[in-house]
Amino acid sequence: MASKQKHGLGSGLSSLIPQEIDKNLLTETLEKIQKIAITNIEPSKDQPRRHFDETGLKELAESIKSHGVLQPIVVSPKADGKYQLVAGERRWRAAKIAGKNTIPAIVRTLKELEKLEVAMIENVQRVDLSPIEQALSIERLHQQFSMTYETISKKLGKALSTVNNIARLLQLPPEAIEALNTKIITEGHARAVLALKEFPEFQNILLKNCIGGWSVRQAERYVTSVKSGIRDKSEVKARVSLNTPETKALGKRLGTKVHIRRTAKGGRLEISFNNDDQLKEILDRIN
Image (tube, rainbow, N blue to C red):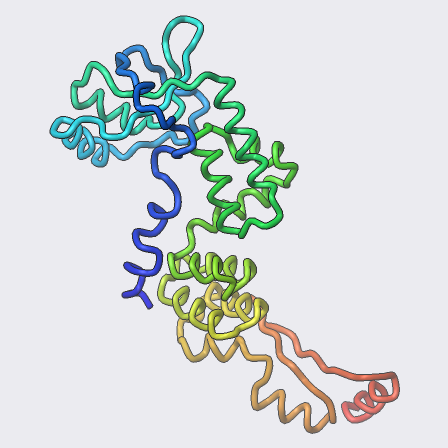
């Protein structure tokens, strides 16, 4: 499956979420694009992205030297006559490196941006959105409206952990995102797959089995086994099963079903019974 990761949903996250700007922030009328002096633009203090890859910035700067800024940034006017950056900080930084004096920008008032923000909040709250659609909307609020996940959680009326967990779904491999979007796997399966992102080989195996019909509980037991240090693929898979030759033999002796459930440290045996009489019979056999 590792070789397929170049396909699936194309270029991965870049095909799912705009890396710099949301089209909703733009305007259809090209004449509203202005050239603004770079020195008159200030980045937002609330910008969630704090680190910008220097190599990537230099590469973008070289492209801007040759072709210019192909996509306008979005700014909001300030009372002092300057502008606050809303979207496109990477392009703004690269344009400075490239020695540009001006940059194409679309000016959006705070009122217009507030309307867009409210519309996007309402969109996240829709009950018919898939988990990935929710994650994309949350990430847009985070990246393009400079909102922290804590602020988003308050606006949505959700726990911060819930918002963080939804947003993290975008870290799934493209095949897992596609399977979740098409409802081949559930959100529970997806979270188990995500838990193994540090073990790509086992993550791929788990995803295949989830697509093949594993339950969420089986997926979680698989994750537990891998994280406990077991690296033998057949042993890891065996630990997912509720039944072993030993449990079958014990179940036959006790006259009931016996299951084994592995945990990070050891596990537990589950002996089933239908009523008190059967429980007494099982205890008598054990004694």
